[in-house]
Amino acid sequence: MDRFDWKPFAVLSVLLGYLFVFGKLYTLMLLTRAGMYCIVTIGMCLLVGYAGQVSIGHAAFYAIGGYTSAILTIRYGVPLWGGLVCAVALSCAVAFLIGIPTLRLRGHYLAMATLGFGVIVYSLIHSSIEFTGGSSGISGAPPLTLFGTNLAEDGGIFYFLFVWINVAVFMLLAGNIIRSRPGRALMSIHGNEEAANAAGVNTSAFKLKVFVLSAGMAAYAGFLYVHYDGFIGANSAELMLSVIFVAMVAVGGMANLWGTLCATVLLSLLPEFLRRTQKVKAADLPDFIHNSLGLSDTQIFKLIQKFQELDVLIYGLIIIVFMIFMPQGIFTGTADMFRTLARRVRAVRGKRRVSDAS
Amino acid sequence: MSDTLLDVRDLGKRFGGLQAVDGVSFQVRSGHVKSIIGPNGAGKTTIFNMVAGAFPPSAGSIMFQGRDIASMPSHEITRLGIARTFQNVKLFRGMSAIQNVMVGRHCRTRTGFLGAALRMPHAISEERRIRAAALEHLEFVGLSDIAATDAHSLAFGQQKTLEIARALATEPKLLLLDEPAAGLNTRETEEIAQLICRIRDTGVTVLLVEHDMSLVMNISDEVMVLDFGSKLAEGLPREVQNDPEVIRVYLGAEYVAE
Image (cartoon, helix red, strand yellow):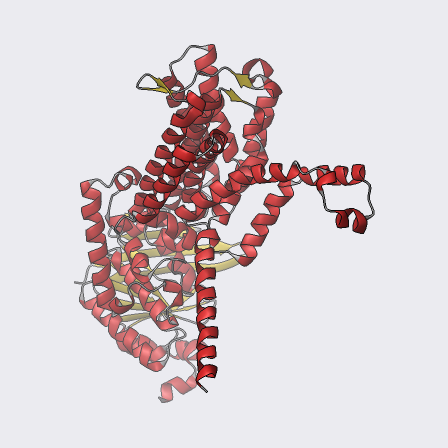
């Protein structure tokens, strides 16, 4: 087994430690949420990035996890750990049932099936009001307690730590997997499924296993979310969220766990940046915009509002731009960029030296 | 070493209206190198695909060491001891040469998700054995110096050899080589011929599909000629070479003159 790389973990711990001590509560809250998404995308990185099996329904597993635990703990007084076990088990069972017929085949059948599945789960949550609360969702899920401490207290600073310790553990486990026999089996499926079969890999079984694993991780993240926020709504099962999860893995560079982690944090903070820019009032805009566009304040305000509804478009644009200009992902891509830049700078300096000498 | 390893009977495959393989029977003896030759479209690769389990035959049986493997999935056939290479090289994209060969060890090892994730002692020691075995196979085919290179950036000849190493890593009793010399130059073809002989000397039986006649005639113990999905002739290389029917449909008159 290759040596485990501690450097990124050290950087991550220092960064999170800094935020934990000096960060605003609001930032911590955003990063707690981002950490939950990381748990989903680490699983999806194994499924989509390494095994090459695209799922466009992981928000549904996330929602199944959250709703199952919320309903059981609120309505039936099931203890939290019971909610957790049921949430993960149900999600895995559903994934198993979807996976059996679709993963036996080669090609993008899983993407189709999960797309349909996600839509079904969303509309089920929306329509079975007496069970899921419909569009108003479920609130009042008990907060997660550990060793008698309510983790969501004090603005959830302990929740922040707890979630990110979870992320670190999952990173470690996923990294161990990809550096060994089952990980190579997943990569071989992506590399060439027919050859993987011929080399003795039971490809259908491995695709099914990694799909179920990723669904279980998504459900666990959903569980963490609902007992943090206390509330879960139908939007947690939205198609858009599933697409964002895929985008996070794609922007991270597909078969790249650290890339996926970075991309997940960046993309989950993106709506926040957008919202900040949305607060810009029409009157704050510099005059030349008014002049050049020839629009009134109210017209510009409406225009801005229109743009505000476009985060879907922005996500789509991000995916396209990355696929074209940085298919190796944000992590490797940026490193490559700096390397090329450094080489160019060196070349220019070299030239200058030559011309100085002459 | 004269017992039958592979016994194919009345094998048939129909693709829609096309009868690709029609009632072909043959045996492969343990320790032999047997070649299947014939014009393009004669059904050679189709037979390979059925023996390797890529798809099931429409008719007939395939007995390997006394077991019917005709409807088995290919990964199980590989575990029973049949490995193959592909006519157009199929290596794993994004993986290094040694990783490609390490995948070949998959069917002889056991570590699962849990053992790997938790780095259990047995998983760590098995991983070490997998790497050592893969290196040995790379050394055997003469590629140990490019172990860490990305498989797809290797030269074509090296890619073909790497595929053979990956197949050998599964510890096959029967190795199916689909046109191993296609696209190679004379020197590389000579190297492949030597490699095939060395593989046979380790006790692995070889079934070969190949167009390079000098290669086939030099290393084969037995040759079978296919034409339009049916068997045209079968026998020692010398016999097949002098068969008037084989010369007419495949070898051509010039070949006899050589």
